[in-house]
Image (cartoon, rainbow, N blue to C red; front, side, top):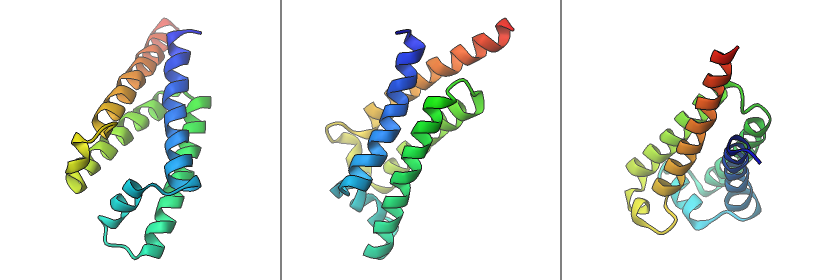
Length: 126
């Protein structure tokens, strides 16, 4: 398996996993804490979390299928930066926890840059 395929699968898997397990199968306490940052009611927080889970799964599947689409990979990088920034602003204490969004998001951004650089190399080779 090529490094590009490994990057593609890991980035996509991460979106799908984070949409499915901590948001749809079982809402993780940290997910509740994040939506509570917006001061929504428990019902709205639940719906927002479930919708985010569905959105993350759909995005992960889209990225898995269309990883050669440069704007999608750029959107992925921006989303990861945005999510990391959101955590930094709303729940900064999570940045020093084990398995925190800093290490996860930076690793996924690095893999996404590999995908992006491959896309640019393919484009310039044409």
